[in-house]
Image (cartoon, rainbow, N blue to C red):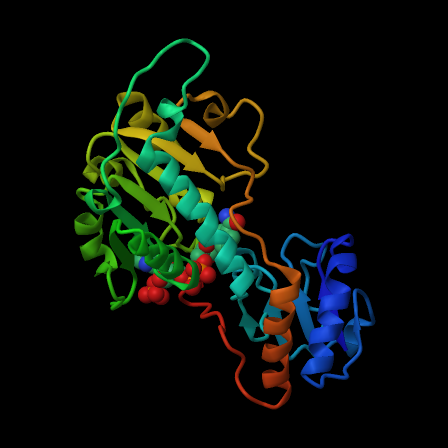
Length: 307
Ligand SMILES: NC(=O)c1ccc[n+]([C@@H]2O[C@H](COP(=O)([O-])OP(=O)(O)OC[C@H]3O[C@@H](n4cnc5c(N)ncnc54)[C@H](OP(=O)(O)O)[C@@H]3O)[C@@H](O)[C@H]2O)c1
């Protein structure tokens, strides 16, 4: 059977699109949100559901993560079956919209330009996008789509990844050696990296210091990619003018955390983009159908690499 393992309320939203997509792929294996672990061969897995211990699933052949981020599943030692991460066109579309929206807010200086009812007629004209350097940390499914969307608006985009990439219209850097070149001169930095041992605390005091004074950080990746204390210090000193943060070390962001009250921080509640059940069900069904035919699943996680 295929087990749908997520928060109990998620089943109502996912059942119909999953059944429709499985029927299209010709999958007639029973699908349910619970069942005898010994009968379970495949799991559709959301890490915020109740399942933590995979050891009773002795006949498990593969797991399709329902999220793009896999750090919780990678760190679970009871999960040894092949693990595929979610690459959902609906989620990518949502992330592009969120990133472009927040970059445009800072690029245009929208907060300052909206005339409040205070009689102040203070004009400032934003530079053109072509005069604005934006750096995208992470050029995977989400980062490359966002980088290309920003480049299509004429932003001067540089991207950074672990391995070398060539993307039309985007300057690229890779490995730790390329990070300083990617950050120097970057007025807006967007983080779309996975959380791994190599990326934890990537943006520390030294690297925040490589940015031009008054740079803006937009983080829809993962909270621990940035050293919180270093970011607060950089905001207090004016090195960083603003940080728009969607993800945090502890979520929900705890009451009293300095980010809540800091005038240079915008907090959004981990909503940058969601897996969309209709589009993601097709992806999950096609991937499970591959595995059931004996082919390797797409988007398998490399546990040594951590993503
Ligand atoms: N806030 C939200 O709502 C939300 C929603 C979805 C996802 N996310 C986050 O977004 C992240 C990215 O998703 P994705 O689908 O784009 O992932 P992905 O396709 O796996 O891409 C990850 C990118 O990060 C790069 N990378 C990984 N480790 C690196 C390192 N040590 N140094 C330099 N670059 C490194 C990879 O380089 P290579 O290309 O060389 O492998 C790749 O370009 C997820 O892991 C998740 O944390 C957040």
